[in-house]
Every structure is written in structure tokens, then in C-alpha cells.
Length: 138
Image (cartoon, rainbow, N blue to C red):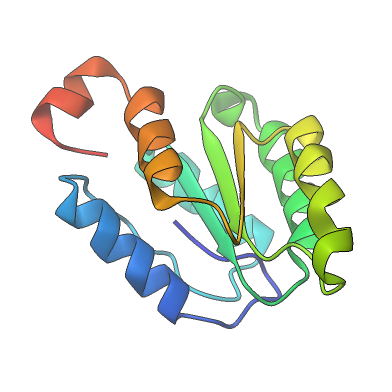
């Protein structure tokens, strides 16, 4: 899990890490303000079952679209489930269109800042290989 490169917020990452760990998943938290190249190299090195991107600074639509494009350009990461969630813009209700753009850009799931956490956890469970779900490792 990570934030986008321009997002320095960390409490969202701490919350999501604890949520996922309490749900039985192993989490590698790469942190805040992670450059695209670093996240990609960590994905290649760790081979996660899924990647969670959290953003709350309002620039998630710009950074997220760039990141997913770069990640999908790496052959060994093309099939990796990647989810993004949080605040994608700074215009309030006008930001709702960003979710569709992020999904079209290549994210497997997109969760707005007002989304129910059960939908996110459901996606994570459905994205993981059956052996990982049974073992409780994500």
C-alpha cells in the first residue's frame, strides 16, 4: 500500500494498514509521497497479491492516472489488482467524475472518500487468490 507521490498524509495509510491486518492480511506499507518508480520497484520486489493506493490531498486523479499508466506498462505487473481510494479532487461534488476516469485508466476498483469500507474489504477479498484468502495473507 502507498499514497500517491504528492500526498504526504499518513493517518489514512495507518488506518488502512490496521484495517487490512485486522482482517488477516499481510501489509507492506511503502508510505507517503512515494515516487512512482519506488512503488513500481517495490511491487516487482515484493510481488503483492494486490496494491492499495490511498490519497486525501485532492490530487489523486492526476497522480493516480499517471501512476496506474506507469504500473500497467511493466509487463510483470499488468495483471496485478490495483485499487485507489480517497479524495480525488478539490471541487467537492464536481469531483465525482474522477472515479470513472481512474477506472478507465486501469484501476481495478475506485472508492470515493465517502465509500463504505465494506465495499473496499469485499474487493480485497475477491481480488486475492483463494490460497491467500484461506491463509489470511494479502
